Length: 137
Image 1: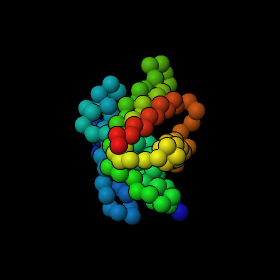
Image 2 (image 1 turned 30 degrees about the vertical axis):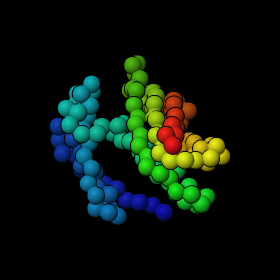
Image 3 (image 1 turned 90 degrees about the vertical axis):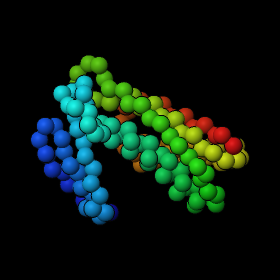
Image 4 (image 1 turned 90 degrees about the horizontal axis):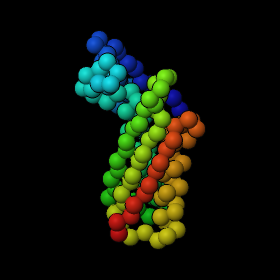
């Protein structure tokens, strides 16, 4: 299934993106370290945000299919860019905190779900992804 998204350059290194199915809008700006104002997510920030939200969403979907619910969950991601050209994402460091009581098997399943979410599988081997799940129950 294809999903249509469009972009409009607004000048000054700023874009407005539209998600056609929902009419949601999102804005991007170049980061401060690359000629921008850092006034919004940069395009590479969105990659990190996409990985974090995809991992959590995939965990919730697959947990439901496996017969249990994902409890309150929070995450954090740090994006590290290369220091040498070409400019690209070098490393994503992600931690996800899951509240609730889970068996050891469920914890292993949730880790696997996060690590194999569609965004994680779409990132090439050139991007190092350090992913840690912490269970607080």
